[in-house]
Image 1 (cartoon, rainbow, N blue to C red):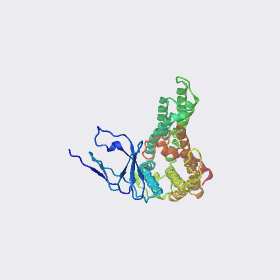
Image 2: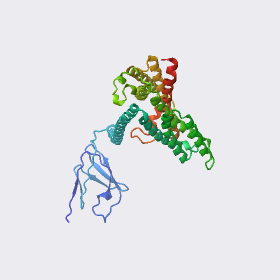
Image 3: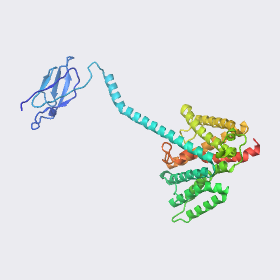
Image 4: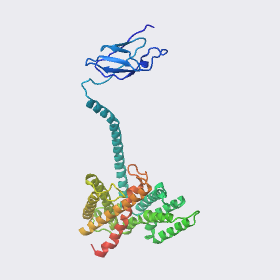
Length: 409
């Protein structure tokens, strides 16, 4: 095969050091592995290549380099010598920023996707819960029992997690499952009997006996975490059944009730329990929403170490939004009658919401997890969505059942 020459054009560009071995045309005749170092002598780009360890020097003209027996194409990409070091460093910096920009874009896409999921599933949950509240009776109770069962399972899984078990012995798994079932039946028993004090006491006695009779060494931490689970996940949510289904007195002055279809219960369907539940649910949603927006906008002072992202500024904005929602809805539903009662009701809803949120945050923090579960895409677990409602039901029921008749407002 006829040999041919390769052509490399060099014109006022910086060169990368080349190995002589890479220029060899025949693999059987290796040259010594020495580096060619270009040095600039004059502004006219007159280059000298110096072999390390040797004094031999050969000159390269600015026009071309010829290498026989093998075609080698080398392209040296650089900037003209007019570019100084600062510009070169700036280019390097821009090059290194590119992966970060891609990562930021991917993270932005992920957050956008999570936001869409959060909105879609949030609307779906809101519509479903609103329908269950309006229906009342067994529909509301069974829906609440299902949420209680799922929440109880998440709670006992958190108790058994590594973060909490590092300082205690978790209850046996069969006890956790039995307690989850007991919690799910509590709302149903509340609707049927109206009072579950005896049922809760009996269930607590049975569970405590099972823990004390287990093999090994029973621990007080097992008993305390289990009893709190029965109270937190089972007993407290039952107050929503008492509020929605137990307070059956009609809200006579409600304008919406006057035009409510007869097939859906007519005006008698709009009871004090229904109105109070709707106002309470709406106030909790407003409290969470306004607290989140206020914290994002002007939040600076941390509220507590339990949840560092919560701020005093966000809490104040949330309180204002909660009270405003309670007052506006009280005017729409004509209940409660006085402005003072509406403000007090909104304040109790906000306090119960924050207390429940911080309690669940403390449990998750001890468990070392961010979310209680992954049941609801974009929202986490069921406890992450209902934590603000757990204590609020008891406060709302006590307000309507005790405070309003006591003070007559």
